[in-house]
Length: 281
Length: 277
Image (cartoon, rainbow over all chains, first blue to last red; front, side, top):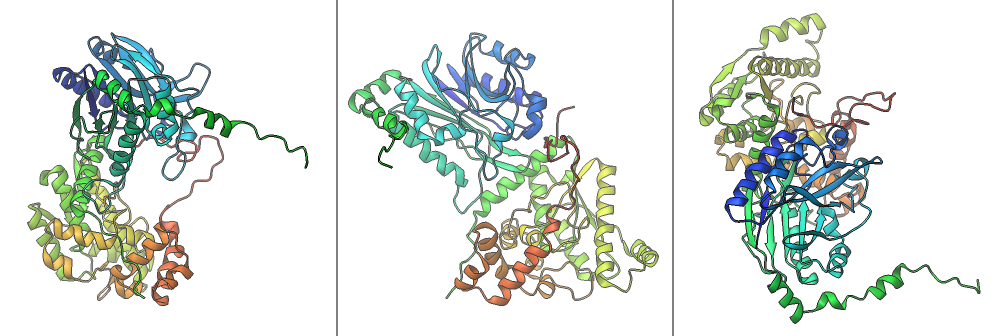
């Protein structure tokens, strides 16, 4: 199987423009023989919407999704949008399409609200972490900050996912290195996530500028041992990364290196248990 | 003790990123190009060079806006920059309107008021040209001068976009070399050129290469005055930098809106700048 990572430059407040970028990349992915194409976080709306979520939040029946649903008839598409929830609130959501239908939704768990990030003002956090299923297998989807909490990938590994898909809208600074500073940080996170869960990891980041904020690109894919499955995308330009996905190779890796099966969830339970009452005090 | 230096930047990556910024801002705005005022100085030369590389020389309008007290060498340097970039340079003298307006205002005898008036007349000329050409005004402020407040509010600080607004002046020099800005523009002392003999260093009391590491350590690293002195920065430099950093901070946010509703613009409603129609 083949997974394509669509590194695009989106614009907040210009969903029609963003949609054209999706359809062009899906076409390229189809030509490349992809079975799944993964887009960055909030790819359809743009990332820095701020209160623009009030204007751009949509539900899964929104007309803007129809071209994407049609495009997903012969390959799966994972993209991001601000999802208007039935009972109020807007989620930073990842939507998996296949066969022209919605196959699953992951709502971002961790909404960064520090430094330049302000997601907690505009979004509500996802209530749960569950694998999404499609013809490729069981997929663990993480949206940007979700992947910076290594427990997320550990829980998805415990749930038995075949691969991890990280959709990011990762801003970056320009430092002394040849690649943006944040791209280096993502390099380590993607590699460590793959190595510790013994799962292939597919990382789709956005590139370009929004509202004066630079995003770091460098989309990348690694196998269950952390070996590159394709060259990383450039930092600043749109690109399509095409990488193979072998569930058999990943399963074989976990036979040789069964690290995730040894996860000590009893330690998690102990850490989360309420403290015992000290009757002597 | 040798004080900390400004961390280096990858100039090639920085230039590439800033070019992409200018290209995207123009695309998102649906306007036709940029307008820049070429002063003959470093910042406007670098901003113009980035714009030409980003959107092409045909989409940059360069104006020279000499005033009654401008150094004639500035106009020659502006022309050299325009020639190097292959763009035309239209000269609009603001001497007559500056003199007439300052007469009306009674500002002629105060060189700061008179200088600020020049800066604001240049702003008016640039935004007028932008309106006529359906263009964006290309800002030329750098991070160092913004942090120090070394600018005229609603004058040279006014622009549609600021590609260099988060770039230290030290790194603007490096960008200038990478972008092949004419050598005389790089080597001459930075000046606002608002009165004869004016230089940034003369007014501020220090050079940008001296103050940039201080500002970096304080603004980015959070070092206190005591810590700045402890790592070896001279007291006069530290006190001068911190005084300007505090005194002129109001220029970072040029205006304040009184919020009396739950939908205050840019407080309760922070919205993308360039929505689709």
